[in-house]
Image (cartoon, rainbow, N blue to C red; front, side):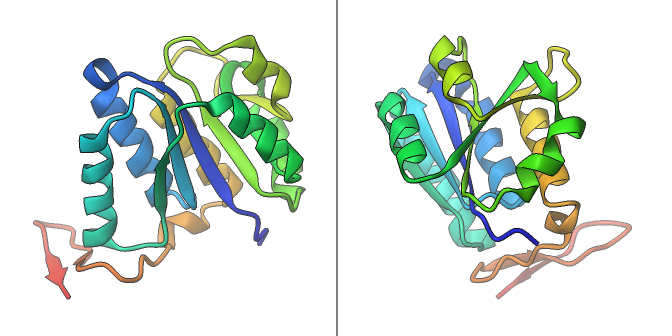
Length: 178
């Protein structure tokens, strides 16, 4: 398995409009194997507190940061020999691009857009990747991308250090408190 890190950049978070969808992007990134998420746009301390609370309660090695100026992040990422993947409906089909992306040993920055993605993102990305080439949720695009990238191994990932753990059950809910 490729040991490169997957970080997610959530562009253009709008506190009043996007809190729920951005929270779901964060939770999906964590649950599906990303190492870190970087939020840009409006600084949203409440959202960040909520996600950090999930990390503390449910465990895992996942971090969350805020970056007002994401433009510099793209330049720094490339300077540090990282690669950028932009999830967009206008890109190469994920099923065609994923093998090359997975085969590269460089750390990845996966960009999940917001309201309007500037042309710089398309230009700076090593891969513009689409999931279905149809309008849909950035949450589903991220989940499918990470699932294909990790080849399904993320589904059995262990999250160490948490206080809670679900016990699988075909009926009802069972949660262990550690």
